[in-house]
Length: 529
Image 1 (spheres, rainbow, N blue to C red):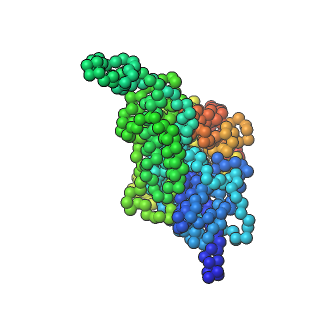
Image 2: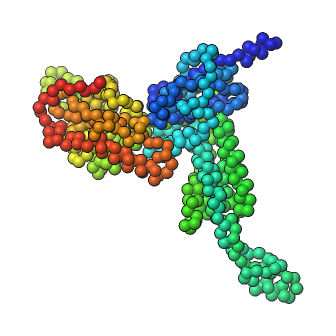
Image 3: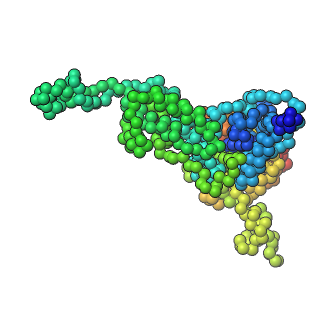
């Protein structure tokens, strides 16, 4: 019996790599088969401290909840029982098989069980819901920018709503101590009359001798319209359903909403529809301004109902996941900044670029100008025709192509990136005037806000090794921090800073008279390192 029990409780380990290809952030929940869950929040790598460890070892006890925050490329290794390892592995494989979440988690080889446990450090934190809030704030901006295409997963809407609940409850907790009583008109039948007396009630009291008169008076009370709206929002948070695997995440927020609602026992209850109508009619006085953000979040909570996975879509009880496409997101950040910086109306996204090779048909001369018809191209040529340059814009009359690279870079141009931009420099034409581009920019996110590689004006400058002269700039630009995602004002401020960094990095590019037109040999110059 003792041997059998020891065998059942034998310890084992499983290792998971977050975003193995460095293009996905997101959130995953893995059931342990014993009533507990493992939740993993995968954050963007530019948010990671430079000295952050990349491999971590934690313990998961069966039946309990373990919440882990990590960065793209990090590996978390869990020490637990063999049955839990099997359940986690099954969930991770289900996520890997899902098309949109395939690049979020990857099973990797675990180290043997002899190492010591390294409990949460700077890189991996347990029970840190704040990181999930930051990730979901990023998801909200991405959801708007990409029309929902960059934020995927069956429970994606439910998770986004759960985080909205958390933001609302946090905001209520921040301002609830500032609840300001206001005068409201009361109408009551009193034995000791006060205020303005209703004439019919007074005549009836004199005639019958019953000293109860309807009185109308003003009274200080916390039963204000603002608090009624807030209380209605708290009731929604406390009662809205959510997917079962998110129950552990929802419970603390629900309990806090109930506790805050109990502090408003003198406030009248409004149902959802009446509260929404009150929001539309509400006019905040200057003294109520601290409640503006709270009312905005309450309106968002009241307007939307929880979206549960439709029957047949919640395919598994082992795992659910949502993911964000970070490469597309970085491209959208740059597009927003370029619309501030570039010449008006000149910013184009995903501009088609023709193949640098054209099939020779029959005895056609090599210098023929006409391109073959689309239906004459084979499959490989058709694939080449689908190439797109990320961004193209005009800056002070110069046409510039921009290639957005979502990866941290030390300042050296990778070979693949170099050959790609080299081809674009010969083939990409402006969608507005049909001219070849005058210069190129390769744009990377930087871990240090506002930094440009090498600290030099204009970043790192490269020139094409073939004629005509053509310049490319290699720039590291500030990636949005969590503080830039909290409000529309903060986000616009970030785009302005990003535009300023781009203007500094592109200063002087393609401003020479010969830019894009010179026939003089450029001489040999390194295109990439």
